Length: 311
Image (cartoon, rainbow, N blue to C red):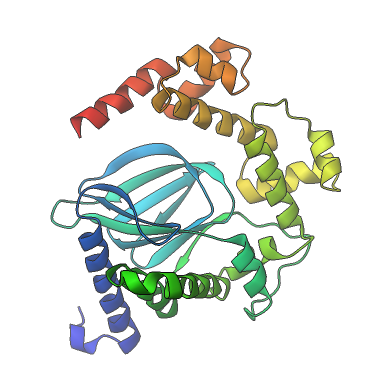
């Protein structure tokens, strides 16, 4: 094994960046849980033990791990990220998340930062990234290697939590720089495609927004395709390329996530939640809920509430 002094300067520098980032997160997230910050869209996370696989609705965000390891599963494909790799979700996606490496001595420490489409659009022309083909659509979720430049921009943003007087003036510049570093990264063309006006990736992203907003309404593929100036077959194919799901599968996942939120947060009974999100059959709702979350609605909600009380 190489000694610290014999490591390449880039590797040693990145280890120093990760150590500082971990120390900052540990200080500002003193207890286990998810912690909002004074920077809009920036959230810190700390967990002292592994967290089982949970169904999560991911919003467009950058995820960076400073210590520990996490995995996200989308349509059967597993994406692992750790201090060497970051994860980007470029459009809302229902997926599974699992913290796989965390101990009280070395807790899982991470951050997530919301991605702003306006920043991506404004910066795409200056990224010098190989432009994506207008008719090309790639997965909206990807993991890539963290670069010293990206970590430096993230570090300078998180350091601002110790300088409240500087936040309003400097945080927007740091956030904008992070967007630029993502666009110029090894998989930045996936983001630049979503930022390109009129591209198929952007049109499919609009379809995602429609399905997320109107999840309780019957799905009419022909009408949606016509609104996006696409054929139904092309919409189906490109939608699956972006989200790893068909439009109908995506809508079902959104419905189930929303029903779960209604039961856990608003206290609705399973039947009322099912009806609210668009299900006409309570038995179908129960079957699909169990398939996604691992247990029937009432039992799964009880298990989650029990874990919360135990914590």
